[in-house]
Length: 123
Image (cartoon, rainbow, N blue to C red; front, side, top):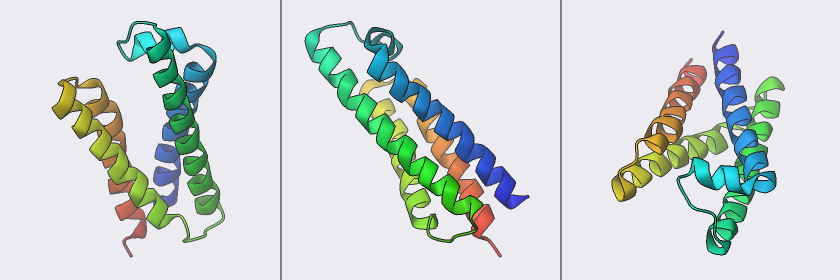
């Protein structure tokens, strides 16, 4: 059951990040609107950079999913790093810009994943 909960949260996170990556790569105008930016060349560049970060995170989550399905313990540290990164990202954007979107999406996802990871590793 612990494994299924963690896998479910990882799959949801994988889907969210993959959708964001595809959106940023292939529909940059829509992605920039989603982030509240107006399309300019500089914003388009930022969207491209965000797309690569989202793709990297998607690949890392995929790696964690494969390791978890194979009952390998090699994913734990990476998963903790991702959790704290998401929490810091959401809180940082909230503090700097005052928007709650990232606070709810990123920090919420990171906190939920952190709790599931701790629950999974608890003997």
